[in-house]
Length: 376
Image (cartoon, rainbow, N blue to C red; front, side, top):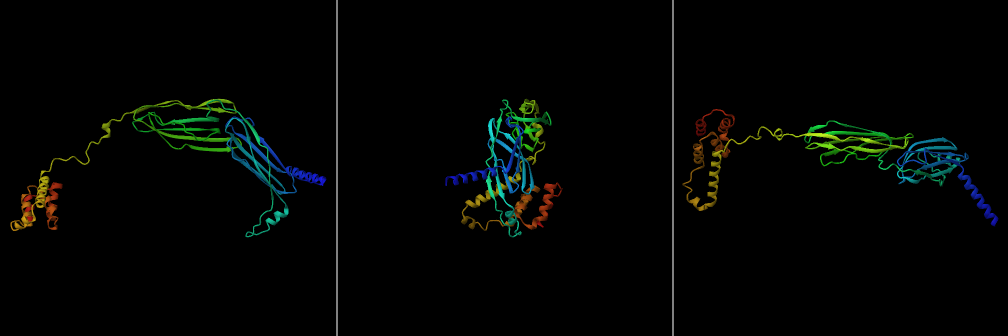
């Protein structure tokens, strides 16, 4: 019985060893001792060794807090019973020290009979492929990451250019500044200028473009700013310390401080020379006396007892008499126009038009002539 168990475990172990050796794994790093944020090219080759089986590979690099990873290439050799995959990744370490690059690998194995059965169905009768999945415990790759020189903010080979559209302007009239940073290496969007006490800064989200390849990352970062102030100010100097891992040398990018002359705008140039609407030419005493008389009549009518009005009803003048009296008392064209407008009667339309032509258009029509037309 003991011999039988030993033989069983020997067969299982041998089968596992054969399973482990039916795929060849090849890993190649461009460097195992990079600097922080230095691009590392990783090439992975998976090659099927056992050609008696049908195999499928599912390979990937999981996300990590220690590095950023970008897959830049995948090629597959789809020969039956001789599967081969090639992957290329670009890896950027985020910190110094020892870090491990880990992998996820699942190997699926089936045979010709299962493949034939799976593809025998038509479009409406798809059959599942029977296969066995094996998780491959691949050994991590170790990177020994070196620290960057103190104060480094850029890693790679970059250039920086800037353009200021003018060095003098009027108060509150903006000037425009464009800055472009481009080159190869690790680059992510960040803010370049900060708000100042002496000027108002207007900006939008930086324009960022990047492309990864087996040669590394090529990126462009562009800032567009507008600055305004009521008085002259200085735009501070900009300095960015960079490090090139290929040459292992530090360098500085930036531009000098700019002095912006702001010319004061005289307040007299901001004021209109004419009043809109025009100023009043004087007090219209006719209008105010007319309004006051009506107000007094209204108050008197409100305060006097109703019975008193009844007792003196016979003594009160008719509406036509009152209107004739008001028209005769009107000494100016404008006063007569106000009387007729308050009556709101169609029969006075010709007289109102004649009065308006005198008051507003300056025509010469006798007041007595207009009054005569009203009596007739």
